[in-house]
Amino acid sequence: VAEKETLGFQAEVKQLLQLMIHSLYSNKEIFLRELISNASDAADKLRFEAINNDSLYGNDHELKIKVLFDKDAKTVTISDNGIGMSRDEVISHLGTIAKSGTKEFFSRLSGDQQADAALIGQFGVGFYSAFIVADRVTVETRRAGADAADGVRWESTGEGDYTVEQVEKTSRGTDIVLHLREGEEELLSSWKLKSIIRKYSDHISLPIEMKKEEWDEEKKETVVKDEFETVNQASALWARSKSDITKEQYEEFYKHVSHDFQPPLAYTHNRVEGRSEYTQLLYVPGHAPFDLWDRNKRGGIKLYVKRVFIMDDAEQLMPVYLRFVKGVIDSNDLPLNVSREILQESRDVRVIREGSTKRVLGMLEEMANSDEQEGKDKYATFWKEFGQVLKEGIGEDATNKDRIAKLLRFASTQTDSPDQTVSFADYIGRMKEGQDKIYYVTADNYNAAKNSPHLEIFRKKGVEVLLLTDRVDEWMLSFLNDFDGKELVSVAKGGLDLGKLEDEAEKKEHEETETQYKDLVEKMKSALADKAKDVRVTFRLTDSPACLVADEHELSANLVRMLKAAGQ
Ligand code: ADP
Ligand code: MG
Image 1 (cartoon, rainbow, N blue to C red):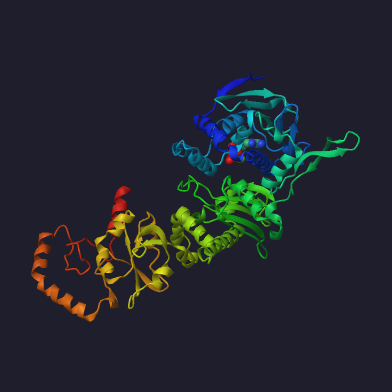
Image 2 (cartoon, rainbow, N blue to C red):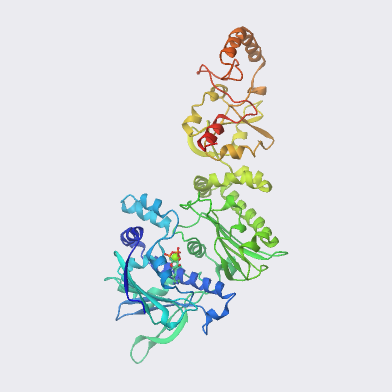
């Protein structure tokens, strides 16, 4: 038998523990939600592993979560018969933080409690939130399939270190015992615990059980019985009918599946019937995760088949440009033993992905076209957080390109602000008489775009120009030639044809000027022979003496700069 060992927490865990206890105290009830959420995940994992190995259940097939308390010992215990943890798993899961972007997250903390509390909320705290109410936490766990003698006890006071030792554990799964801090005694009440569970964990599909309490007429007090009762609805939330689900329940479910602390911006819940049968409950988060740009990151959709959890992050269920969407898809058609490889080829999955994409775009359109300020604000938040990702859809999803184009927002010479708020429709609504093109300029940043010499003639004529400064813009534009029949034209390219915007008198004047300067232009051309392809008299500039332009069919200056930066 291995000796009891004392191990130190990863530095980030220590930081997180400290911060959490102080900054999340005002919201301390969430510890129960987090621990129940983990117990539910553990049951999902067991169900999944047992699809191919039924013996993992032993003689205990009914998955459930129990919440117990002991007034004398001042403990609250959350107990599950899920997958459990081996010794190695305990050490890696309860001693370190595996989340990607962890280092970056900690470097962003400022020491200002309020600001940091908001950040932690975005990061998600999980298991360690137990220390908000407990000054000592004991975990006893046994992995499904392991012997009773191979249980593991983990214990910590949430300071620098923790202990692990091998123990005998008769049942499968995990018990988390919270030794409450002084002053947390109100949690030692059936009524209090039940009300927290109903508030935050009602959506959990497993039964959450507590001991029954009954009024004893003789003793004139409530006594705790040895019987259990289920205190939540214990059915998969997405399988319930919409009219039975409150907004709060939808939001709490979101927090459970996304490991996010903040409510989502929007959600859509549908049961699809017909050739392919599935239920989708999809959410748009309110903020970007820390690893939005991680190319290896998988999507945020949990796949269930007939209510059985199959996998997290089933990336085939959502196109890459919608990778920020979180939620659940429950298919009635896929086989239980479906693998990632099968998902890749499945016709059912393709149908689900197409259907889900349409739903998500619909959800975004609803926010974008909302008449109410709340909806508008939500879309502005969405765009700020995820707009750059959505732009990838222009190149990636030819079928929905037009819908996505309508959702795009830009900075513009009209608004004089770096905020991206102008849609193509807004732009078209403001077009000048005789204008038949949508003009834009690309640059590294807003100031460079705004001060581009190419804009001078447009300012003079009062013609609006979109200012495109995101990294993905050049790439996106290579897939977007027009919107609503109006050509998209870079103001920095080619012999700019202002079309009907140029009046006859101006044209004549320009021609005269060109002849006047013909000799000078020829001289400059030969002087710059190896540096410039052409030299032209221009009428685009009103203040600057000269500017460089790209050939109509050449890469723009900005793209050349980007490719150079990327080492091409
Ligand atoms: P998250 O749930 O976001 O992964 P947590 O901090 O809540 O983060 O939990 C960390 C990890 O500890 C979980 O991913 C899981 O592997 C493990 N874990 C926590 N609670 C349990 C449990 N009751 N049963 C099995 N594993 C658990
Ligand atoms: Mg968790």
